[in-house]
Amino acid sequence: MSGKALPPSMERHSPTTSPGLRPHPLCVPPGSRCLLLIPAFNEGASVRRLVLRLRRALPTCDILVIDDGSTDDTVRQVPEGTAVVTLPFNLGIGGAMQAGYRYAALHGYDIAVQVDGDGQHRPREVGRLIDELSKSGSDFVVGSRYLGKVHYRQTASRALGAWFLRGVIRTFTGLPITDCTSGFRAANRRVIRAFAHWYPEDYPEPEVILLLHRSGYRISELGVQMRHRKTGQSSIRLFDGLYYVIKVTVCLVLDLVRQPWPRGKLVDAGLATAQSGPVVLPNATAAAGVSESAAALPAGTEPRAVPVHP
Image 1 (cartoon, rainbow, N blue to C red):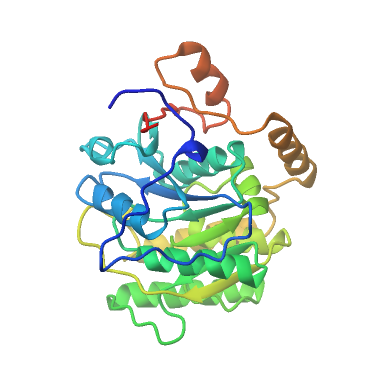
Image 2: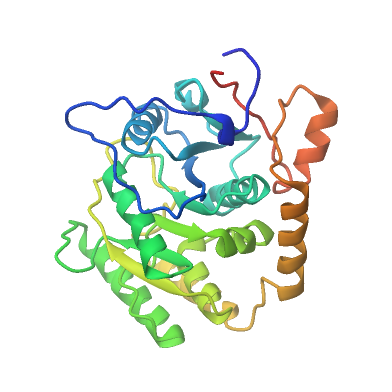
């Protein structure tokens, strides 16, 4: 891949569609910009097809792939013209997503949607999630595998773990969230700025629900259809075990006294971003540019912009 690197705001993906995948009529407020965040760790077998499907279904949305230190050919499989942030080693889902949210905050995006790189999240459902965020007035929307008439097959141990954590979240927040471990979620500008400032590292999916609720953000849930993973490996490897549930519960208890998003810092960060305008992540080979944008990414990460078509 070669050529001049452009920010996602200057990308315009082709609206060409196939008979089985039509563009989704998004309900995005006029003038709003949406970024699809794809965290990918060893997802070389699925990331290319996912990006192409998202482009066809959601041509007005920009896409960012966060390569979380993959050891396979994930980066080479990303279609040309797609922005990529490459992390030098595996930070886990928390570090990868914070890198994505910082990118979104610096580029002034109004909506950010997390879409797993394994292809479980359907492009049409991404559109529904964006619609729900825009129409409901919520700050944060979680796509649930279990809400309403949606049916998602899983093992007994996974179902038990999900049921237990659902009870913990409801006890601590009063929110009837049915799928607190779902990685399919949409955030507005307020939440993007909060996540750019701080994001949980180990078990971010259930933790951010509790933390956002405590900080006064509005959270809602939408029943969605999800595919079962066919390739790659889950970023949460211990979901089947009691060990995972215990550790998540301990983290949630600690989150009851944690204050991750000081109000003053968030306001200051938002003003600074608004005044400076969109920031372009430079090519990693430009030493001067790397030092400038590296301050906006988690420690130890290497920002890299994949060249896009003019």
